[in-house]
Length: 321
Image 1 (tube, helix red, strand yellow):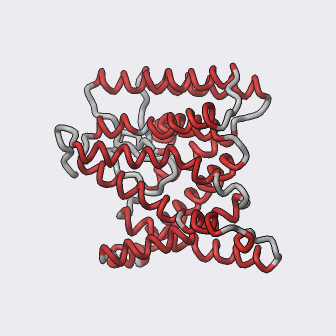
Image 2: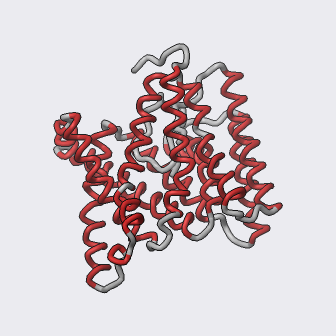
Image 3: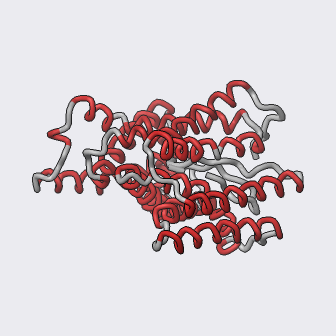
């Protein structure tokens, strides 16, 4: 197990701020391409990410890790499942941004750490202490209150939190090297994305031909938007204590929350206030419990990414968009 540094480094903090800052402001990037249907934009994001992955693996000479995964059927099946989950997460996030539901994505990534706690209980046989149990109940109460007040489940928040929670579970129980896993996940998705885009083009429903140069460059840059923050996050994870890194995980959904309410003028009703209040109280309780027990925050992970670092068994992986 890699030893975590005792004190935060300036480089580690700056890299964490870069990673979570980019993830927090990612909605602005996808909002600029809302002329593209979400499923089409997902296809181009997958292909652009695959191209970046090929360059990274080649530059790092990490092909041996990719080949090793391909030669293990169980590992390959796990990577395929992880790829499906992250594709679902990406699609719902882009759709939410395009349909002015950015606030729902913020709630989803605030809920995600608590979803990880529940998955540990249900799938890993872990036990909740009193504080964790109260925290999960508070979050559930917030979701149920919003459902009652608004008349429908906050499905975007739940799908984002659930898909990423399950993704983290798959990567925890069948870990793969981050770069090799990223490359293979995008390699599995790339043929499907290419076929879907070809089909759209053949039907005359593709949007790329009519896109301006600026929009085309944004689409092409989506691979760097996907890979860049991960590299900064991986660097921060090596340089920061888990307790410090764990605190940064709330930066991205907080930025997204402020964007939704302050920049895009999404309505923040009493029902939203109650839901967010319950979730914030639940997260504060989990943090207090962690500090009281003298254990480090579980290693943080990030919204909208694909490769959360491993954490010790018994501690939930905390991750986003």
